[in-house]
Length: 376
Ligand code: SOE
Image (cartoon, rainbow, N blue to C red; front, top):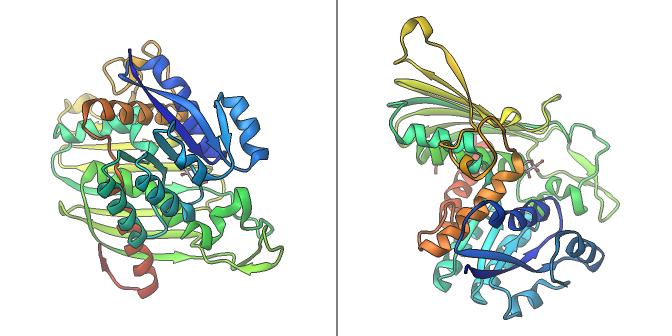
């Protein structure tokens, strides 16, 4: 009989849906000693009531503080805009709840450090939702690097390109467009998109030591959905940086929401002494792999279709050749988090791990301002 983990989820947006879907499915596919129960969802009533009905939450709350007071809630899942992560997470830690928090951890690393201190002081399980690590092809890349197949790593290239903010008529702020409001998001593509690249890059290739960056805000003013007024834009629309990793390798990173034609082109390429890897979110079940050790007459880039049962997570799904998608990365992270509770080895990234990404984001923004290299 598995032990129950009662979930209280806060925020009924895009991420609230991905997390709820994961909790509903995880025990259908993974054998776990912990089982999530959708106990309560919290948001404005007009949102939380239909959300609870659709996803099967037993109850609703309209005040997150009230959710934290409930004795029948074990895990608080924070799917809120970035400016609310710290306050809710620190209060949840004080209330002794386990916490899963959407990325990025915080508005900046000063705030992130307080969150780390709070969860570690309270001794509560904590996790940040950098979901892309758990796409099977990305996890396979990690395994190949850890097995030493690439040898010494020289270079890597990391992109996250979107195009949904190009129109100058798009407003900022409010429910769906808070990512454009610096007061709520903390930064633009640096915290929203590059944070994913940085988390994945450091997971694969170790810590980043220093960066030099440039950012640009292409559209300087937008109507604010809350005030109705034309207001200054404080976010970075594009953010590019060069990085030096602790292992001596060099990297370039580029994120923008102004790359016409690209909806969510998250890619990385890693070049090592013996082999190279390339992955692309638009073709997420494939890992491209070049192994210089292959016989020269058949040497070339392989396109590995990651769907076989000896590839990461795939024994839990269908039969070889049948692929899975984006939503499954959230199912995998729910499984790993729950397994971490049972085994006592916490799933990564914890708040402390995610703080390292936050520090790189801060260094990128500082470097873009000063024009100088910045140590992380
Ligand atoms: C932004 O458009 C966004 O939804 C990010 O907030 C997510 O973290 C990313 O996974 C997809 O793009």
